Length: 111
Image 1 (tube, rainbow, N blue to C red):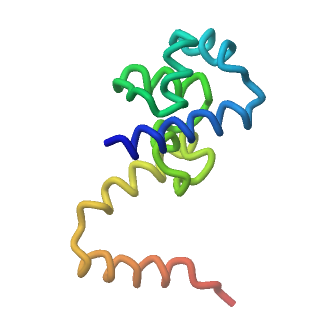
Image 2: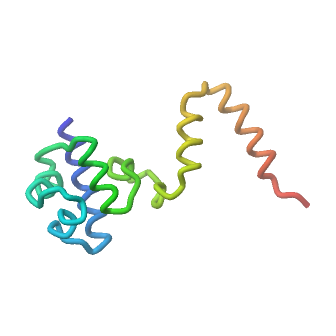
Image 3: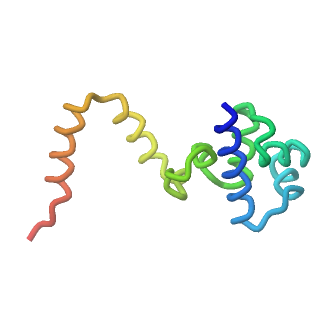
């Protein structure tokens, strides 16, 4: 759990810095205290879902981007892709392989 807190804190700080925000400005935009943001970024505390949602909104990122650097930037604005990914995640490997063939055929250059 501690490692997740540290990773979350590092990613919050990175997104904040990338947007040129101070902790005070992020606090003002999110409605989360500066002290809480400082503790989150240091990995000293976790955050409830409501706080995560407020921070993500203030940083203009998908909440998942605060947990993994592997989430594509701007994912928040690609709701269709997010919904499709969620649906695909419940499929078996066999079904995913079958769908991969369909996607490959659909995306094959015509000419």
